[in-house]
Length: 508
Ligand code: UN1
Image 1: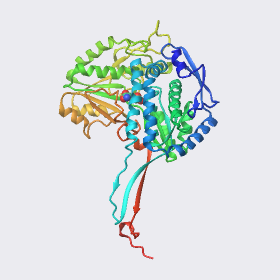
Image 2: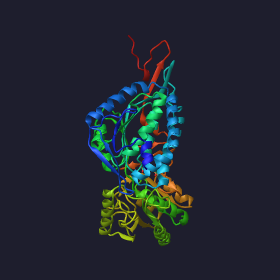
Image 3: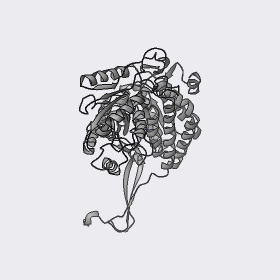
Image 4: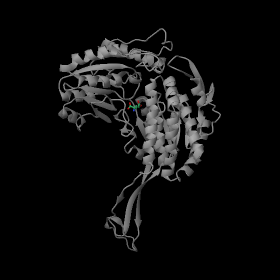
C-alpha cells in the first residue's frame, strides 16, 4: 500500500481542498482515515472551512467562463485522456478503493472499470449533445433548441462507490462544459485525492483552466453550503434518503436543480418458473457483494410458494460456503463493513427484525479473532419476514437478506413495490408472460427492472437512478447528460416582416 500512497502523493497529513493543480491550505477540521480491512490508520485529511469553500467556488466560477467556450469535442478529447490515465492507474486505484473502503479487490477494479467506461461514453457524447429542430408556424422563421452548460456542478458522493459515482457525474459534466466541485464521503477522502491527482496531470497536459475539477473534503456542512449556494446551479447527491431530503429541500428552496440518487430496498422475485441455479448467483452476489453496501444491493427475495423451500435450502447452503475476510485476498467473497458505526447499525437491525417477528435461518454476528481485528467484519444473515415489518421497509446498509413468500404474480409485484424506495428490482423467470407483466406499466415501480439478472451491477450505458424515496434522478448513460445542461429554444426570423405568433395583429 505504501507504493500506492506514494504514487498518488498521499502523505501522513493531506489537504483535502484543491482546484486542480493547486492544493489550498485547508483550515477545517482533520479527518483521520482508518482502513476497515485491518483497522490501521492510513492518513489524515484536513477538510475545507467556509473560507476554503468560497475560494474554491470563486476559482470554479472563473474556470467556467473559459471552459464553456471550448468546443465540446475538444473537452471530449480531455476526457478521452482521462480514460487512458484511469486505465494506467486501474490496478493502483482499484487497490486503494479496496483498502480504504473495504470492497473486494475484484469490485475495486470493477469500480475503476466503470470510470473508464463512462469516459468512453462521454467522449462519444461530446459529439452528440444534440438539440431538436422544429417547424415554425410563421413564414421565414426557423426554430431549434440547443443545450448550453449550466456552470458549477456540486457532486456529493457516498463511501460505497467512492470514485465511480464521481466519474459518472464529472465526465458528463465536463463534456457538457460544466465545472465540478466534489465533496467526497468523509469516510473515503483518500481515493478522492488520488482521483484529483490523476485529473490534475491530464488537465495540465491539455491546458485545462484551473478550477474545472475541484475537491472540497469535509463533513455534512460542506454539502449544506453547496445545497444553499445559488452559485451552484446543480447539486448531484448520492447517499441516504435522509441526506437527500435535506439537500433536495435546500436546493429546491432556491429553485436550483438537484439530481438525487438515494436509498434502495431492492427485491428479486423468484417465480415458480425460475431457473433456480442461475437465480442463486444473482441473489447471493446481490445480497453479499460489497458486504450489502450497494444502493442496488438485494435486500428482499420474494419467492413463490411452490419453490420457496427448495430455494431457501439452496441459499442456506450457498451462505455456508461464503468466505469472509480480507477483501484484498481474492479468495474471499465478503469484506468488512465501512466502520464500527455500520456494524452497530447492522446489529440493531438484526435485533429489531427479531423483535418484529423475523426468524433468522442464517444467523448474523460480528467476527472476531485473527484477520478480523478491525471489528468491521460481519456474517451475512438471512431472515424470514413479512414485508410490512418496519425494519423490512427500511434500508439497512449491510448484508441482511429478507425472505418473503408469495402465491400470485399480482401479489409478488405488490410486495416488490410495497416499500418507500424505488431503485432496482428484478424477476427470475423463464415465463414470458410473467416477465412482461413485471416490466409493464402495472409492474415494477423502480428506476431499474431486470429479468434474469440481479438488482446490482448495472452497466453505465443505461440511465441509473430510481423513483419515490430514491429521489428521481438519473445518472450515467442514456440521455442523463441533459440534467447537466440548460435548454435554450431559439427562433430566428429571416423574413422581411415581423409576424406575431398565434395570429395576433399588432400594427403601428
Ligand atoms: C451505488 O451503490 O451507489 O449498479 C451505485 C451497481 C453499480 C453502481 C452502484 N453499477 O450496482
